[in-house]
Length: 201
Image 1 (cartoon, rainbow, N blue to C red):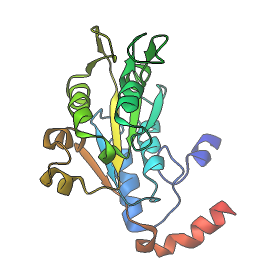
Image 2 (image 1 turned 180 degrees about the vertical axis):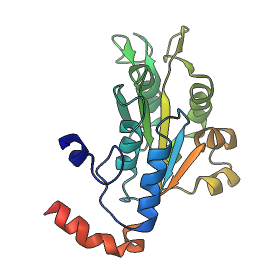
Image 3 (image 1 turned 30 degrees about the vertical axis):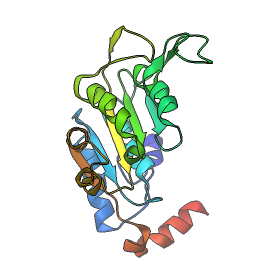
């Protein structure tokens, strides 16, 4: 009973809202709990993409596995590559010992790639391989590692337009866009504002 109360209004999360579009989001999150398909969450900044990603993980069969988040906009290309895939000792200046990447550490669970639209093109091809085949090598290594990870990605970027402008790989977009969740902005759900105010108070 207490766990059900803590879970909030959406399966596996603490999303507050009664807007019909948000209710549909909750239903969708509940309906995909038995799948391992990749999820793409789209919405403006502040619409709750991180909370929905966590809800997807917590309502799935992988809920007891790790849930790791990577902010793809916060790191430069080489640092992001190391963060995602790890590195071997001596791979670059400052790499004094082997380090596991987020994909390796997320084995058996989910990885949340926030701001996926900010990943540079040269790294997108490497990301495509792990999304497609669940295989990768650490930076500076030649050992191929295999993982079992569900990929949940989110962005406020119009990825379809980015694909048209050759700023985002079409094949990667389709690999990520298996299950799509579109989140409305708060101005599109004003009836939820009193609920949110009460929640935060």
